Image 1 (cartoon, helix red, strand yellow):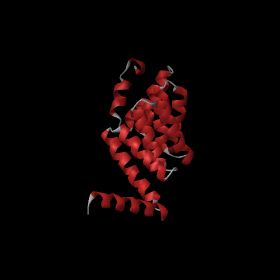
Image 2 (tube, rainbow, N blue to C red):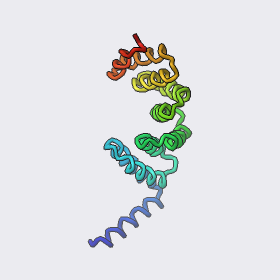
Image 3 (spheres, rainbow, N blue to C red):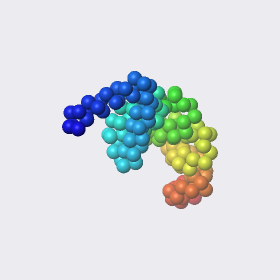
Image 4 (spheres, rainbow, N blue to C red):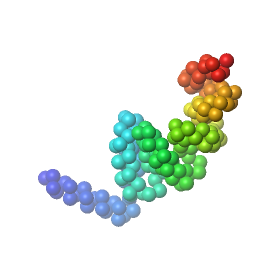
Length: 173
């Protein structure tokens, strides 16, 4: 089969999948690509694949989450928050969306809002060692060193080695 015939076959197959209601299958496949590219640090590739997935399924919370995470990787925090807000609108109990949105808010210096998001992430998963770590950083940004040290201690207790370094800082001694 030549290249032109192959492209026609692919186009027809995709069109039939969309018409038969299989767009969620396509969207999920693209979302898997988003995850793989995120793990490789290909943030622009993540955004491209998530954009495609969202064209097939505009309510794909995984695509919004990965796209938001990629935007954080590109330091586009405002846009990341926008995507993560969409995830949370679709799923009020999406723990990682709260954590990532909290991180974006923390990076923008919105420590109180970041703490609110980390509180929700911890409520949804009390064993989330990273949520405690970053909530501690946000508390430290507000000069709540006692609260920060308590969060870092909990993060360390849950197995986060980086928290141990923060506990040794001047604020926890």
